[in-house]
Image (cartoon, rainbow, N blue to C red; front, side):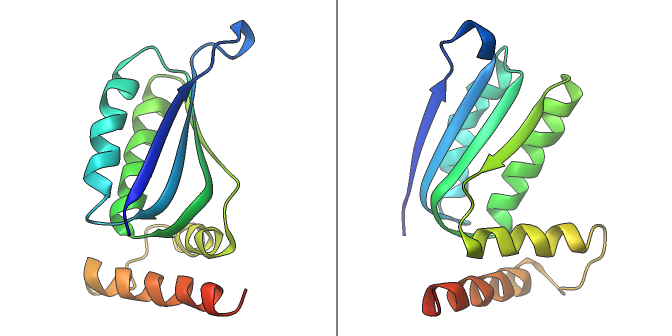
Length: 128
């Protein structure tokens, strides 16, 4: 499944430096490089806050999580922050799994982790 990326910079003075990235589709090893490419100039600019709107994101793999982690690390170093809004249940569960296991490697490799995350997300699609 492809990914649609919309990047919106805030035009209001009180939200100057805020960028919202809306994602639609699947963020995986195939589509993650496109998000990374489109985010590079944004992250290199005068950005303070980055908001990922995940209302239409259907699937995420470890490749997508790495992009989020990289953006968060870069913005934190600049005194900014990264936020996530409108998560679908299957995406929220992936975030909960990662948050619950910081620094603990429970998968033998990325492929195994991606298979596990895909199976968990499919469960939400099959049982809405």
